[in-house]
Structures are given as C-alpha cells and as structure tokens.
Amino acid sequence: MAASPEQLDELLTYCINFARTMLNASGDFYPFAATLSLDGNVAAVGGYNGEEQPRPAEIYELLSGAFSAGARAGQHLGVALAANVNIPAQYSPEAPDGLRVHLESNGFARFIYVPYKIDAQGVATIAEPFSVQIPPVFFGNAGNA
Image (cartoon, rainbow, N blue to C red; front, side, top):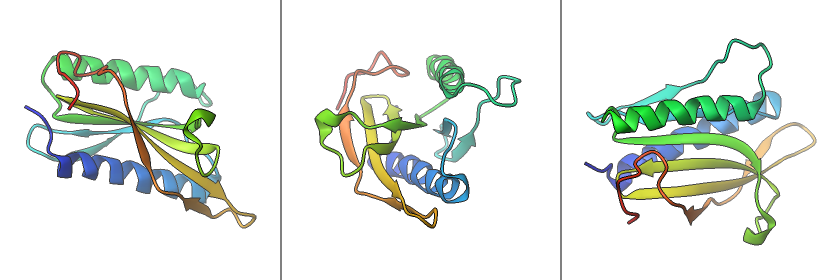
C-alpha cells in the first residue's frame, strides 16, 4: 500500500516547518524524521546515539536503519528523513544551504530540496522546494512513480 500524495505532502510539510523552527531558534539542526503510520498519522521521530554532540551523519544513519527495518516489517506507509545539507551546485539552487527531505513510500522515492537563507537577525527564509527522483531505499521492492 502506498501513501497518497496528500499524505506525502503532510510528511514534507511537517519537516519543512520543524526545520524552519530549528533554524530560527539556533541556525542549525540535527537530522530528524517523521513517519506515516498505516492508519495515516504523522509522527515525529528523532535519533539519539547516547552522545551529547553526535556527528549528524551518525544520527542520519541511525534513523535510516530504523526506517529500513520498519518498512520491511510493514510498519510504515511512508517516511521522511530530513538533513541540513549543502545543495549540489548542479541543481542551481537559490541558496547553497538547504533542507533535504528523503521522502519515500511504496512506489515513490524523492529527495526534496528546500533552499534557505538566514538573515543577520537569525531569521530563516525558506525558498521554493524542488524534487529529485532517487532509487528507493526504504521501500526497495517498489518502483518509482
């Protein structure tokens, strides 16, 4: 079963809003995530490896592993894994800094890039998102739609 476009949009909107909140509060954020349950509810997911200041890549891998296991076990209808990244120049982003959301469900796998800028007062301005199709990672048995 695949998530609907509206459900995937709900996951993405959660990630954009949370990233904006974190950027406005501290100018940065660790990887975070959200899941879409089989009954259609969005739930926030964080990762903790026991360290006070872990490497962001370790948290990303921790969440990624949990999502792979959860998708194989049929626990999720969709997942969104967010990271603070430098957007590849090949995409000609409005700003080099960006939120990247790995948004995936059965039959759908994309990186959604959301460029942002932080002004001198520490306020984040979010630009228009764009997507890049990727091979499925969590729902690997599905084709991309």
